[in-house]
Length: 403
Image (cartoon, rainbow, N blue to C red; front, side):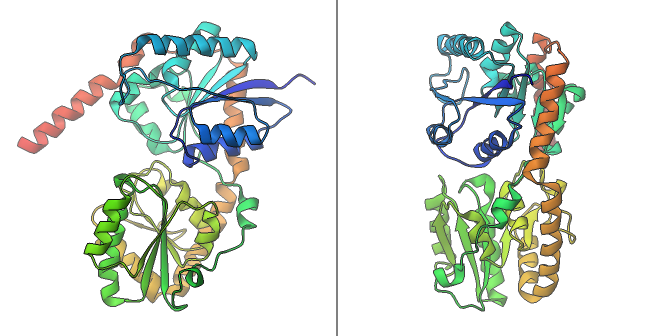
């Protein structure tokens, strides 16, 4: 039997374990160990700590981005050092394939992989603006995996070769999550057992639209006053959101519980999940809510409709305002049996279509293709492909405002 192929996973992210980090951990844990051996290079201390604890070789280093959003933006020497270090790591560990987890490391890894003739795949868990698609050199990646077709659309529109692109939906560790015991959330929060308890999970940022859920809840309580909302997560908008709750008079029925290690247990202890997201590349928390067996209320946006079908496996609303969301929340209160039936169908769908085994198998198929077929990387001129499309959209928007 041949030795496993060493794969260098390069991850850029904040100091936390959330969507893309969890996906990476699941992937590494479930890779076929007889074929692949993981080595990780990251700037994320939390991820480094978890990987090291689990015996996965992990290198921790600061990743200064060239032309990034934060200063210094023009440190060409720092970028060159990353390219040099990447080549050194590839040669030292005899790396057979590079897996870039998130767009940013593609900025230096795409060049390092070219220089060492190493196959590379870039894994995108979210959409990126045109500026980042250029500065992160996404169009120079030999192959791209996206978490949803919605993420792929922009790249394809800009001319990225569809034969070099694979859509692999995120997966859940079904068995592990199903075995997680439910938390009696109503008892924990000292609520009436007859209360209807909604829950939302996510970073407290504008994009997640939690402010819209508060607006919907405010109107919902006019008709159903025993309705409550649990907010799981933390983020930069927390103080503003708490202020909004006070202004709307919702202090007694909105419960901020912060980050939780046992999210699935909290979900199982609630009556329904609601997302107010303005944008959603995939929606891992939505999928977890489906697996928890509670009704899902989510916007028809991004990758969500790729695994939630309205009135079959969940409930989708038109992604504007909050009244459509409120009407579906009202249905949970007035038609609980019907909503539980939809939740059961959603749970079955998630179990069969979004397992971690499906996820890992899909990525391993990409690995096999790249290792068997030596592909010529895209021409350097492809780097600027997002630019003309971005200019056209700007002109269209300007014309739309003044025409």
